[in-house]
Amino acid sequence: MGKKQQLAGDPTADPKKRRRVGFSKIDAGVEAKDCIKIYLVSSGEEVGASDSICIEPIDLNGFFDEDGKIYGYQGLKITIWVSSLSFCSYADITFQSTSDGGKGITDLKSALQKIFAETLVENKDDFLKSFSAESHYISSIVSTGEILQLKASNGHTSDSDNNMEVTSDVEVFRMSISNAATGHLYSRLIPLVLLLVDGSNPIDVTDPGWELYVLTHKKVDPQVGFQHRLLGFTAVYRFYHYAESSRLRLSQILVLPPYQCKGHGARLVEVINNVAISEDVYDLTVEEPLDRFQHVRTCVDIRRLLAFEPIQNAVNSVVSQLKQENLSKKTHSPRFMPPLIVIDDVRKHLKINKKQFLQCWEILIYLGLDPVGEHMENYTRIISNRIKGETLGKDSETAGKRVVDVPRDYNPEMSFVMFRSQDGEASTVQMDENQTNQAEQLQQLVDERVKEIKLVAAKVSS
Image 1 (cartoon, helix red, strand yellow):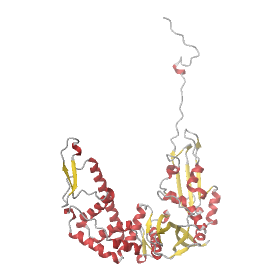
Image 2 (cartoon, rainbow, N blue to C red):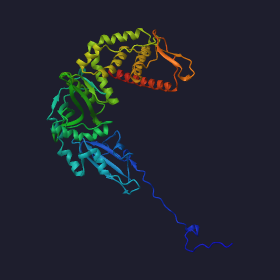
Image 3 (cartoon, helix red, strand yellow):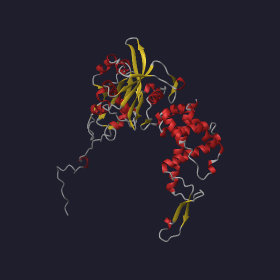
Image 4 (tube, rainbow, N blue to C red):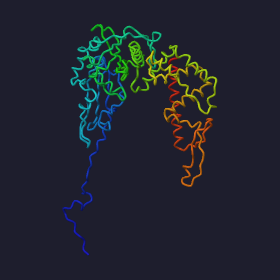
């Protein structure tokens, strides 16, 4: 049998001459947080300086597409400067080359405008000129507002780390968001709110119910005279409460990074408390407080409550009971809730809402037990009972319930009857694997809460 002849022009005839198919490398992209640096600067000299204050955004990736990545750039570096005088910003973008690696090329300008909007200045020279041209920007804005007196317990306020005496060069101004100048200021602050406040959304500057409380530091500049520097602000909403009353809700609060941990957050809280009391609103609430702010807020409220005489008897009564009894021997431990009249007195006089007061109540008991050592088991039990009740419902505790087996042919696993005993005897409910996991999760919540309580107690006792 003859062999089939290979054609002379067949490129596969010689293995060395076979065609090779190449595949271009798919662009993996770069995460926004890995190529963007943001600096807060107060002068032109600080732009590009190595010691400029770098701020750490909550989540830069969230502003870039679905996966938080930037595509199409090699050697990309984005440096953004934000002026702490005018809150204008400028972005310096450098890269080695661009190419479409299958994911397109990210439009950096539109992406950055999602964050910085009209505050983004295109020309660097214009940005540098803004430090002199708008050096009095904050002063001109707050001049339209109402200056509020800083009042603090014992002449001091405190933040999470430092105590700070109230000084005359730190001022708080209240301004209605319906004022055009106030709305303009807030629009310039939105980028920092988005970058630094987790889960935040801009407020509606067309809603007259919003008020802005701006904390400033007044200093003398040899070249420009008096100048107000913005340290932080809070946005508060005033809404109607039946009948002929109103409620205040603190919805956003931000202290700029260079001024954090210096008592300024607590100052803003104290000012809002004073406004709520002086205007006799129904109460003051906070919209979804972050853990760090909740700590500051609670420290402020605990100091106020310790000086509030009408609740002392109720606290002492619970403390005395916890010192005398052993709750571990009880089949059903009481929750040791404050009397309704005490809850109402606190709301009426201090404007602390019920939810916040109940959080503070547990800390007041802890402080009353000092030294808490031998009473810690009792104390932890009332924390555990409260968390179980809130997490699993009012009937979460199995104490006082019994399970009796009832033989049945239909389904042996379902052959039981549960009833509540009259004498509160212990339960014989068997816990399955899911219940075990549930118990571990509840214990973790209890441990976290006790840790929070100890941190606040240590702070207010120092």
